[in-house]
Length: 112
Image (cartoon, rainbow, N blue to C red):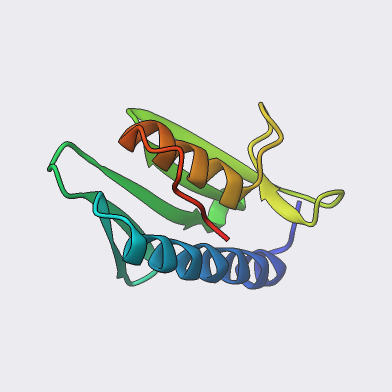
C-alpha cells in the first residue's frame, strides 16, 4: 500500500490525466458535462438521468467511482503503475471510458 504522500501524488496525477481526457471528450460529446468541485469530479449527464462521481479516498488509498448504482474502488498496482479495479484489472481511464460508453450507449466516446 502506498504511503499517504505517495498516494496523494499518484492519485493527483491520475485524476488530472482523467480530468483532461474527460474535458477533451466533453467537447466532442453532447451527452455529458464535467465539473471539478474541490477534487471531487462530477460527470453530469445532460438528460438528467444521473451523474458519475470520481473521488480519491485517502484513508484507504483508493480512487472511487460512483457510477451506474455501483461503487468502483480502484487500488494502486505497482505492476501497472496505475490505479486499477482489482476485479477486472481495468485502469482508471479505460474503466471510466467503458462506463461512459455503456451509460450513453455511445461506443465512439474515447478518453485519452
